Image (cartoon, rainbow, N blue to C red; front, side, top):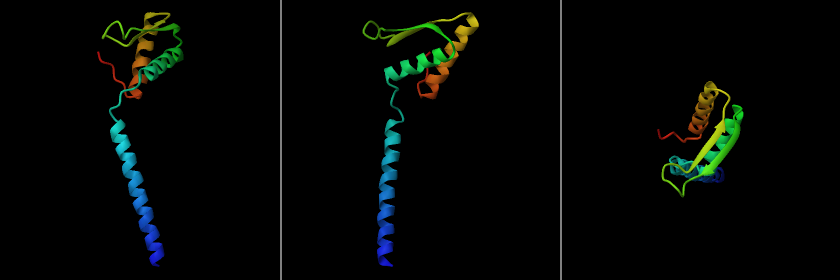
Length: 101
C-alpha cells in the first residue's frame, strides 16, 4: 500500500509543477503585444473575408512614430468601408490587440 501512496504523491507533485508552470506562462504572456507580422496577417485576412480589393501594406515604422505600417484596401461603397474597418477592429480585438484611437 505504501508503494501506491508514494506513486500518488509523485503524480500529485508532477501535476502541481506542470500546473504552476502553465499558470506562470499564461500570466507572463497575458500582456504580450501581438507581433506586427501577426497583426498584418490578421488584418489582411479580415479584409479579404469582407471582399476588400487591392489590399496593400506599406511599412512606415522607420519614417514616423505614428504607426508601424499603413494597410490600404479598396472598397466598393461607404458601407463597405465601414464593414471593412469594423471587421479589422473585431478580428484584432479577438487577438488581444485593441485600437489606440
